[in-house]
Length: 344
Image (tube, rainbow, N blue to C red; front, side, top):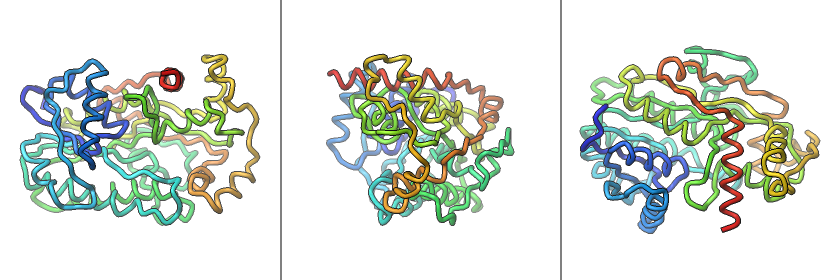
C-alpha cells in the first residue's frame, strides 16, 4: 500500500478525536478516505473541521453505520484496501451498568467479517495499553515481551472501558486464527491520548487536562498515565498499515509516563495565569478509594494509585521506526489548544 493514489482507507468512528486526526493525515498523504459515522449530521461537522485544518475534503466520503448493527458494513468496506478500526464506545463515567463490552467486541467482529468478504488487505485496530497490563503494572518489560502480556479481563478492579478494549482485541485475534483469512491484522495499544484539539470540542481523553485547567479537579490524585500524542499515534497506525512486517503483530504506542502532579506542574510553568485554576494540593488516597465505590470514573483510577506503569514501546520504535515526541510537548500543546478554544 505504499502508493496511496486511488486507494481507499475506511476509518471507523469518524467523528472521534483520533479518527479526525487520522482522516486528515490520510487525506494529506493522498488516500481516498471513507469514514463511518453514526449520524448523518456528524459528516457535516467533520467536513467543516477538515476544511478548517487546511486540507481539501474532496476525497472524503461517509457511511452512516452503527457498531451494534450488521446493516451497511459490507457496503462500507467494499473497495477499501485497508481499514483503520478506531471506533470504540466511551463512557466510563456513565455508571457501572453501561455496557461497553458488547459494542466494542461485536462491532470489531462486524468490521472483520466485512473485511473478509471484500478486497481488504490490512486492518489496523486501536486497542489500549490496558490490554497489555499484567497484574504488576510496575514491572518493566521491553521489546516483544511487552506486547506478549495480556490483561486479565476478569479482574474485579478493571473499569468498563478497559475491559471492553481487552475483550474486543481478544475477539479480533481469535477471529484471525481461523483458516482462510484474506487480510492481516495489526493492533495498536496506546496510552492516554493527548495533543491539540481537532476542531473546538474537547472530549474523551482530553478531559484530564481540561478539568485541570477549568478548576473542576480540586485536588490531584496520586496517579499517572502513559501518554501518547495523537499526531504520533496516527503516524504509528499508518506505519503499521504500510509495513508488511507489522502483520499479525501488537504494538504498544506510548511516549512516556507522567504523574498528574507532573502534568499540573508543567501547566503552571508553561501557561502562567491561564493555569491559575490548576490544582496544587494532593488528594488523599482514601478519598479516591471511597469515591470508587460509587463512581465509575473513580473506579477507573483507583487501581492506579501510586503505581507507575512501565509499558514500553521499544518494539514500535525499533521495528516501525516510530519516533514519538517528548511527552511534555504533547501536554503543553494540548493545554494551549484548549485555552485557545476557550477564548473563541
